[in-house]
Every structure is written in structure tokens, then in C-alpha cells.
Amino acid sequence: MMDILAEPFPFPCERETLGLVVIDMQRDFVEPGGFGETLGNDVSRLGAIVPTVAQLINGFRAAGLAVIHTRECHKPDLSDLPDAKRDRGAPSIRIGDPGPMGRILVAGEPGAEIIPELAPLPDELVLDKPGKGAFCRTEFETHLQKMGLKQLVFAGVTTEVCVQTTMREANDRGYDCLLATDATESYFAEFKAAAIQMIIAQGGIVGWATPTGRILEALN
Ligand code: TIU
Image 1 (cartoon, rainbow, N blue to C red):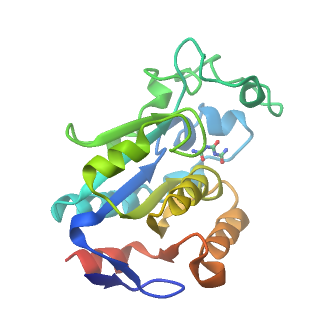
Image 2: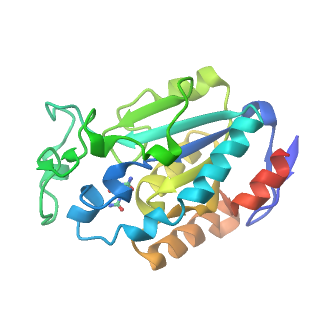
């Protein structure tokens, strides 16, 4: 058993059951011309965390611990895209439409790929998910059970959408969840800050939060 210094109190975990989940570090969210920008966002904020996410991934790999990557994307026939998701808001182009990086948020298109700086290794799980949360209509829970994971460190984008949704889903399923605060980002600084506060409030109602350095200290 070891503790990682965190808010609201130290995060208890065991090396054998600890894994890293990197949420949606895809070109569609981080690079200009993708889904994030079609929603009207300034995507440059998200690029700033890439070196820190890389440090975190490398720390888990060096310690021999599991690294899981998720991608928010849809089947090319869009059969897993609810109308409610496609029709929401007034984006400049919609999910499934052609954009500068291929069809927006469609599996197999360049925009749906994880950014090259954070490319998964061949033996790492890459989970495609049609929703904001990683458990919705996926085999994520089965994978976690097979891998024997019980405590999950979270990184990726965006903090208050796919990261927080997945943390809430994991928390409800009995996983202890720790957010790496400098390895996650939002298009809205105030939403990131609020999401962190919501997660750790009320004695860690959804989980814990701490900077990457504290996590790497504990792994060394
Ligand atoms: N990955 C993820 O968070 N999907 C989003 O749509 N996020 C937004 O902030 N829009």
C-alpha cells in the first residue's frame, strides 16, 4: 500500500492495481480544424498540457503500470451517434461531416487519432467511446476487471466534460479516482477549476486531485 499526497486527503493505492487513463488527447480536440474548434473554442489552451501528460504517461510506463487511452469517436456509418448529440448547438460543421482532418470525430479519420506526441504503445489499450463517459456503450469495465485495476489516475481533455464524466462513472462503479490537475485542461479555465472543486468536495465525493509531480514522486 502507498499514499499519493492529494486533496482532500492522501490517495491510498497499490502498485498492482493502479492504472492511468488518458482521456481523448485527440487531434480533434487539441489541434485547429477539429471538433473542438468547430464548437467555437480556442484549442490552444489544450496544447499546453501535452508535455505534462507525456511525463505522466512515461512515469507509468517506466514503473511498469498500465496506461489506457480513450478516443471519443463514432463508427463511419454514424449508427452510434444519437440525433441529440449530432444536432446539439450550432457548430460550424457537425460530427461526421468532412473537415480539414477528415470526417469530424469519426473512427479511422486523422482527426480522431491521438496526437503523435502521446501516441499509445502497441500493447496499450485504446478504447473508442461514442459518449463523453468511457463506460457508456463500451467494454471499459470488462477491460478494467481483466487488467485487475482498482485505482485510476485520470488525465486528458476536457476536464469538465469527458474527464469528469468518466471519473463519475468510475467512482459509481467502485473505483478510486485521482485527477492529475496539471495533466488535464478545459477550453474554459473557470470550468476546469470548478470541476476540480466539485470532484474533491464533501470528502472526495467523486475522487481526489493532485499535480503530476506528486504522482511521479510516489511511483519512483
Ligand atoms: N473529450 C471531451 O471532453 N469531449 C468534448 O466534447 N469536450 C468539450 O469540452 N466539448
